[in-house]
Amino acid sequence: MAIVDLLMPKMGESIMEATILKWHKHPGDTVKQDESLLDIATDKVDSEVPSTTAGVLEEILFQVNDVVPVGAVIARIKTEVAEPVPDEVKPSVPEERETPVMASHPDQAPDAVKSNGNRFYSPLVLNIAGNEGISVGELEKIPGTGNEGRVTKRDILQYVTHKKESNGSFAGSFGESAQSGFDETQPYPGAAPETSGKTPDAFEYSAGGNVEIQEMDRMRRLIADHMVRSKHTSPHVTSFSEADVTNLVTWREKEKADFEKREGTKLTLTPLFIEALVKCIKKYPLINSSLQGDKIIIRKDIHIGMATALPSGSLIVPVIKYADNFNRVGLARQVNMLANQARNNKLKPEDIQDGTFTLTNVGVFGSLMGTPIINQPQVAILAVGAIKKRPVVIETEQGDAIGIRHMMYLSMSYDHRIIDGSLGATFLSAVAKELEAFTA
Image (cartoon, rainbow, N blue to C red; front, side, top):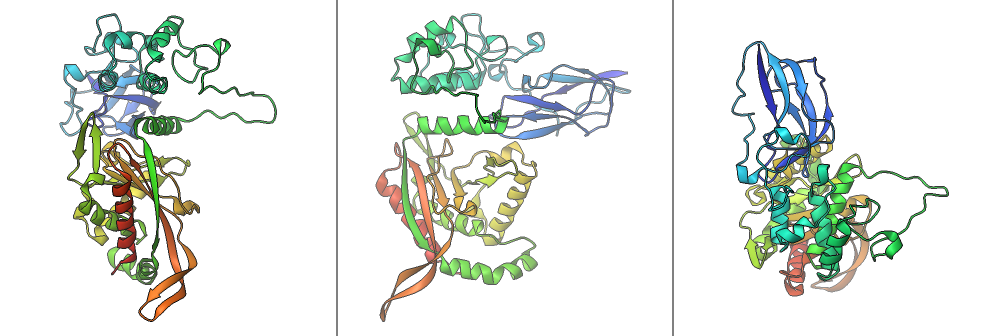
C-alpha cells in the first residue's frame, strides 16, 4: 500500500489559489485515475480536478468553500502501488516568494508571505498593495474577512476603492474602526457603523413587504467586483457611431447555409465584426494597450475577447488569441468553439486570459446601443447594437435618394487616461467604415 498526495493544480500563471466548490467523492470511496474528484473555482473560471491515480480516497484535507493555494495537498489516495504523478498533470508548486496564505489548515501550508507583524498576506494582496502605494503599516490596519482575519483580495480592493473616493483621507479612520472588527452589513471593510452616520455608498433596505431576497452567486459577486474596480480604475468616455451594414447582412444571409455545409461551422455576425476590428487595431495600435503605473504597454499581439452570455444569465469573456492570424473561416470556428465551451462550462483558465480588446454584442438582447464597462486591464471595449431596417439618405451620382438599409449603432468606451476623444472617435469611425465597406 502507498499513499499518493493530490495537489491543488496550477490553473494559470496569475492564479495562486482556488476555492473548493464541491467534492464528488468521500473518504472510503473508490476512485479511478482521471476520474473527477472535485470542482474548484478561481477568479477566472470553474474547473474539475481529476484524480492523478486509482485507489481509495483516504483523506480529504479541505472542505467546501475553503480557499486553497496552488500546490497544497488537498486529499490523499491509498493505492496498491505507488504511482508517480504524470508530468502532464502534476501541478507545479510556485516559488516560495509566490506562495499565498492558506485559508485553513495552516499547519499544512507552505511557507507564506509574512509582514513585520503577525499577519500573513498572499502575493496577490501584496501586489495590489504595492501597485496602489499602500504601506505595510497601512496594510496592517485593514480588517480581513478571510479565515482567521486574513486580508482577502476583496478586502483590499474595497479598501482601495473607498480610499480613492475619500481622496486619501480614509486611512486613519479605517484603521481606527478596524480595531472593533469588520461589520459585514457595511459596504466596505471597516466602515463606520450605521449609527455614526451614513456614508455616501450606504443605503438602507427594509426586508418587510412583498419582496424576495436572493443571495448573489459567486459568479455575480466576481462580476460586480470587476465592474466596480474598472469604474474606479479608468475614467470612462463613450463615443457613438452608426454603420450601414446592409452589404454585410445581405452577404451573410446569402452565404450562411453554404458556408455551414462547406466549412462545418455556423456563420454568425461576430467573426465579421472581429475581422473589421482587427484591421482597425492594426491602424491604431494604441487601442490595443494597457497602463501599468505611468507606462503605456502597447500589445503587439491582438487577442479579442468576446462577451458571451451563459445560461445562468451571467457573462463570461473567452478570448480569441492571435485573432489577426485567422481568416474569416478560422474566426468563425474560433467564435463558435469558444461560445459552445462557455455555455457548457468547458472553458479552461487560459481561454479567458490575456485579452487585449473586448467586443460585446448588446444587440442580441434587443438593445440599440450601450455604454459598456472596460474589461481591465484593457483600455477599450466596443459594443454593437441591434441591426434595424431604417429609411436613410443614400448619396448617389444621380443625387440623394431615400432607401431602406440595415443600420447598426456602435459604441465604444475607452480609458481617457490613454485614449483621447480624438483617437477614440477616429477608431470608432474607422470600424464603422470598415463594416460599411464589407466585401466577400
